[in-house]
Image (cartoon, rainbow, N blue to C red; front, side, top):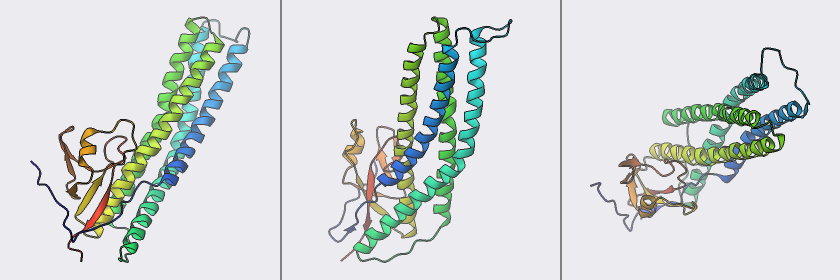
Length: 268
């Protein structure tokens, strides 16, 4: 069993660094704007194709073949657009989280009577690079998943008599799914990046202990995370989670909104 750490009366427990809502909203908005442009392009083309009385088809090809090829051309074009936009968007996000999380921790420390000036340490640089890489991968995956589902919808529509009304509803539903996925990515990645960068700053300050804080914001809280609330843990190890049978950190698990409060021991 892991050793239980207890906060001492002389410990100084700092306010927690929480994910910045502004960074999340801005990142979400930028991703969703790309998705909206992509969806508008697809809907425009499909409506035009379906409203034609008889699409111009090659004699040896079926309407389904023509539609499939056209969708794949659109997919290729939009995949390229997302691929080109991903690096800059990912870099923006990483820099924004680093600036806000470091700034928040500096303000917390200053209020507690400590003046610090953070540097770009190797650990922080590695985390920022990893954050950029993760965002690039997630952003690039959006059109791939979107067009896979769109192609299936169009093919089913052709098989059932090419009903434009039903297809339009299906496209709206898919847009909603993709739109919500962007919101999830922004929230989840903001949580993860903030937590990782805060740990790097804790290490820089030689802070070795923290108090786990359960946010209580989710509709379906993890029972083990609720049980961790208020407990002290080693920031180099994390907290033992019996549900996943490994050591974890606040904000690390998917959609985890937990954070921590740094502990400065022996404060008097």
